Length: 433
Image (tube, rainbow, N blue to C red):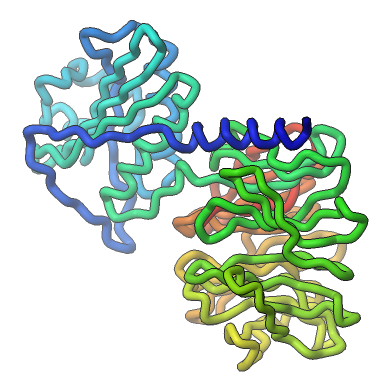
């Protein structure tokens, strides 16, 4: 029964992820615009959406699609939404007759116009058109469709399309894995980037922890005590199948290479914590570290050529780097004594990690280009397990700053802190890349 429940649950997830997206062939010619690094945020106008003539007039659906896209673009740090109150100074938006001068007068550079069609069967088609206000040109348009239950996903896809068209990495349909005890036991869950649609993946009576994504986003690596030992497992999202990957002593902190079918993880099978690589196609393994010290928390660089990890070989837990085959080991941190949880930024230029000073744990970011360090969190509590967003502009982490452990996101410069979980205690987030 439990296995059937798992499979049915996963089938629901797959259906949710596979909402259709069609491209509409508009008569206007598409114009490409790209954002250069260092440019200020682009002012965007997002007026109220309209219904198509044949649509069921469901304002709740229309307004929620609008609000989700508004929230997504506001979160992006690429676009700056023109405040809604400014729209009162110009005439109401007419999608069939764009008044570019009006939008320019309230400092909008980009205009996003949307129409919603809701059928009697509660299926949704959202049509989006994007315009360059200054040049008075149509930029691009897309249609997005699906059942009402996938309304938020439809809106996230639309916002992702805007990001992608401007040369940015889409993040709004990305998922986040985490561990929660909300149902009485520590299990693996995942959710949308904004904390919505939180769903459970594992169903057992044992502790599951330290989840991470496969490079194809279809599998989850995690450590479980289901057989009485901290073993490494792999869960297949599309089939509900669970595989044992590594057993014997403790096996944990697995990370999947983004460019090939290899994982790196920690195991104590040799008597102390060492780092291993496993080829997931051939299942052949190779041990990378050979010291009596603790070597743990390995993490692949985006190009899969280097691995960051934690070692106390110098007497204190510090961040080290090594080449993918275990050579060229070098220490990169020197301040403090208890580092943990290193993770590369998506562009490979920075490492986020935690450092314990006194009784507090905070998140720091090390810039590998200029060897500078910034402190991202400032709190007397514990801020742990940082994980970068796919675009490198945000980090999710766990913190007990509110008393119980919850998940928070923060921008790369320490601004825009927001809490994204509230039920139970929630830890060990892993953002899908």
